Length: 292
Ligand SMILES: C[S@@+](CC[C@H](N)C(=O)[O-])C[C@H]1O[C@@H](n2cnc3c(N)ncnc32)[C@H](O)[C@@H]1O
Image (tube, rainbow, N blue to C red; front, side, top):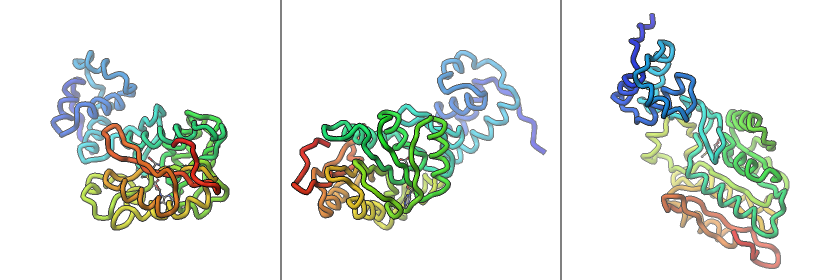
């Protein structure tokens, strides 16, 4: 039998959750979720900390707090995550989109805005997960022809659901990297798995799909495959742009140069860390002059 839940005032419930080890912000967002209120109601919570917490909400809040204290991502508990201004539904089938990945979206948009890129440029997002990158690009530039690809049927179902909810028309391909891809693209973007097997950081990521995270002994197996195969699907003057680990930029630039890419360069995230690297596939007459 479920034990009765001791009713708390809202402020007391928050204090109990924080005593369990939750950050104050996480506790507030979970309490708002349990009460069926939007994230923007944090001010309301402060003003009502003496209000009684209804029993049903108290029970749900306790369950969610315990799961959060055990390490489950907040985004899975509330079922959504904001990315590039879009509300995406997420669950354990997909990686939780990280704000670091907005660096890749910004770079992609800059590239697509360069002279010579058609308004309806073809874009391919490899390893789309929740659809975060593909949907952010399409939402910002609706004329783009965006394809989202993943090897995971389950992840593609989440991405399709997000595209439907946001009313953004994408194409979807189930494929291991470029194996089932045909045609050519102006931009190929990817945030592939890049954590080395056995990396200490994995201990904190056990709730997310391991297939979304790890890529061989040095974390570069998937990046090597993508760099090897992407040129067959890039227009001359088209770009490949990849997110990678904080310490992988030099290795990824080297792989791109060896494969024959021009204008090889990296982009830093808000913390100043080289977070993405990419290059332009050369035209037959030589390197493109278009800025990345
Ligand atoms: C790091 S997650 C990125 C998810 C999403 N793009 C984002 O930025 O939040 C990597 C994604 O690559 C997918 N993936 C892993 N191996 C793959 C493969 N061989 N071919 C295609 N996708 C793959 C995973 O299923 C996962 O969705």
